[in-house]
Length: 264
Image 1 (cartoon, rainbow, N blue to C red):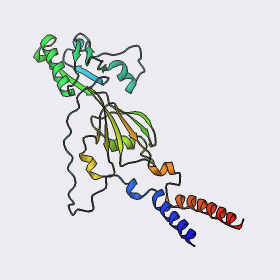
Image 2: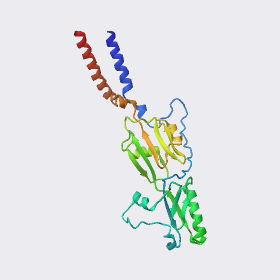
Image 3: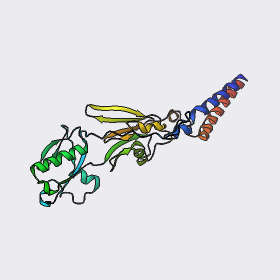
Image 4: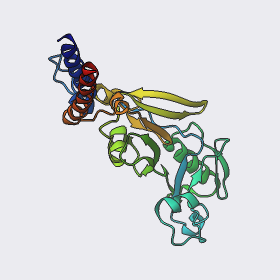
């Protein structure tokens, strides 16, 4: 009789710990313990400062189109190239010393600058050395998309690029097929590049407060890792029905074995 109770308790415990709960799957949950219903105000994000290996798109416009053509590189070797491939050939990569090479201007250090600061810097050089104020020089500087890599428990792992000035981690995850049922949304790992090296950060996407995290917005060259929940290693199933079926099979096997041994 004691053995039956023990097996029953074991079955209940396994059922309670093996299946994945709704709380583990829901993004940005509100704190129900407080009566404050005000939405969390998203903090203003600091502007991104350029790092090594970033890819920039720089375009110059002015009344003097002939002179402007010197500063706008066009790769004739790949006339059919489009999108990211075109940017790879015609864009400006920040090298290991933090410099980019612009036709006629030469090397320009941009490490740690924002794109607006680079735009002002380029425009200042052009007005000083190549154009008169009445030339109406117009310079645009943009990051050539935000590239990130996402691996682990995600629908479509791999490297992706989104052509936006700002991308949240929720958008990046949605763009990669969403986190699987066995992915841990409460501890998403972000490996971010800094001038001194890389740092590891964590963000809990099951809490609404995640929107105030400095890691809520993806930065270029971020590596996002989605680790599995413990339930995946248990192998008992992701839903209550799957877990119950698996545990029932184990329970039946144990009971049969005990009955066979007691009859010997």
